[in-house]
Image (cartoon, rainbow, N blue to C red):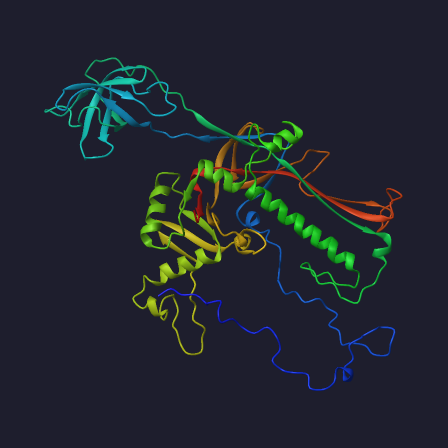
Length: 466
């Protein structure tokens, strides 16, 4: 039975011991002008470990230069045509029928005379028919059924139709008309990301008694070193989070109204793109094989990429571990699953790195989704994980004018022969070695201009609570 730690009764946070001697027996005023000094831990304690969350894009993508305010690429469309909203006015038993295509966005039926078509009822029954197309006009196509009793599908029943071949009589003319291949064109725009840190010349020369501790190993007693480094770390995190969380500014939005169409335009981040062109799992984590089967069946209808990475938060990771453990006959007791022999001298491994079921799925924790100051602190509508296909894909690069192999997920940054805006940093002022102005300070500026390209977004999955 599921349970949780109750908040009441709680735990004590006040000392239970009592100071028995007089307060005057203790030194409380540690004034550095007197003869008494406290014991000090000079080195700062790293109680939150490595606080940076930037790692996701470095693991799954690449960075490439771009020369424009707009990045465009073409992705292949479907090879075969399928209409899922077709109806016929002919009654069951008819030898011929005219079908009308009502799919959204379709302006003309691209079936051709002589092609053979498979027709299947969408719901409410299992009737289907096979026929040959005898005429095509606008959004309609006329068929003659191969079935002796005629049409099986009832009149005016929503059905699906796709071509499976063709048939022509001896000596007949060839196929009339041809089909032109079409691509889906996608684009994204880079955004400019900035930050800075400023410290006065006097503070740069001020020694402190606390020794600096930073994620890059820098040490010393000059506090501005720590502040500058944390600004740099924060900026690097922003570079990744902007690519993940970014959304385009919609027409009439306040962001555009502030500076006009030239200014705050936004960018299409990973989450936004998957919600628009990918796949979304809602209502909690998939935690059973049936849930994963539903995901796999959707992937079958998309690109069917064999290897996929699952970047998940802690709860989602536990759900996957529990699901895989339950497949073992002793999984409920957590004693025997895994490819190892348990004994009393080893720690029991209760986690899994992945699974294979139709496709290969490799699981890893995503720190961004666990960090309490970021997505880890979101209660409602949170993102629990994302599925990213591994490998690369061929696309037609509009700038290069040729086919190029690109990772499914990669960053394009602005660069040319004279300017590289991937990660710019510079120092201004008159302190810290800079001599650019009479400002008695050192100002460290950071800048980047970049956009995320999500190729084949139909192969991605976003896992959400709601």
